[in-house]
Structure formats: C-alpha cells, structure tokens
Image (cartoon, rainbow, N blue to C red; front, side):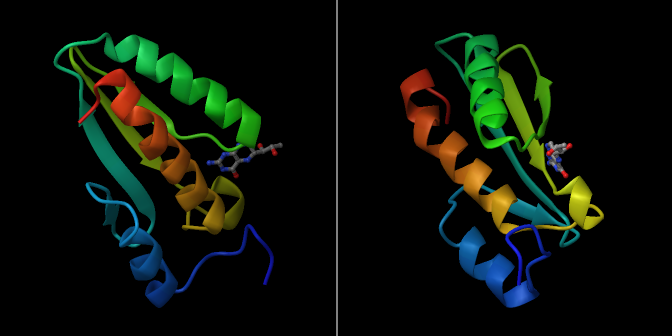
Length: 102
Ligand SMILES: C[C@H](O)[C@H](O)[C@H]1CNC2=NC(N)=NC(=O)C2=N1
C-alpha cells in the first residue's frame, strides 16, 4: 500500500485516537476548529501554511476573528483520508499550543 492510498476505517479510527479535538466527517475529511483567545489566529494560519508547503500537503483553512478551522483530505486519493492527512494534522497539533490555540 502506498503512502497516499486511502486508509481503511480501522486505521482512520486508530489514527484519530492520537489527535484529541479532531473529528472525521463522513469518513473523508479530518477537521478541527481551533480557538485563539489571546494571540492572532492569522499568525497561526501562516505557520500552518508553511508546514503545508514543507510537507507538500494542504488543508482548507478558514480564518475567523479568533478561530482557525482546518479541514484536511487527500485530493489525489479522490477526497479520501490518507496517512498524509494525519501527518499534517499531527504537525499542526504540535505547534498549536505555542500559538495559544485550543
Ligand atoms: C503536485 C502536488 O504534489 C499535489 O498537487 C499535492 C499538493 N497538495 C495536496 N494536498 C492535498 N490535501 N491533497 C493532494 O492531493 C495534494 N496534492
């Protein structure tokens, strides 16, 4: 199985278990909305954008007044979930506390 092949339901659940606060929508999209009450959400968005370019894997980001909503799927897998989606989410999750994102 290649790295960008769609994951099975069991593997999706296992990997989701490592990402508190994230949810899977319709088995196809990995989502989390962060709230940033103290620091600018836009700075967090720029940091996320840099990680995405480094990984060459990109989410849809929605910037709000004090929120950043992240939605991740793999277009090359027909909009299904792959290991790349979970790896990106884990990288975002790792830097979120430094931005006061909760
Ligand atoms: C050519 C380049 O590798 C592709 O377009 C990449 C870029 N970022 C991507 N991001 C996501 N989420 N899915 C993709 O299939 C994808 N493909």
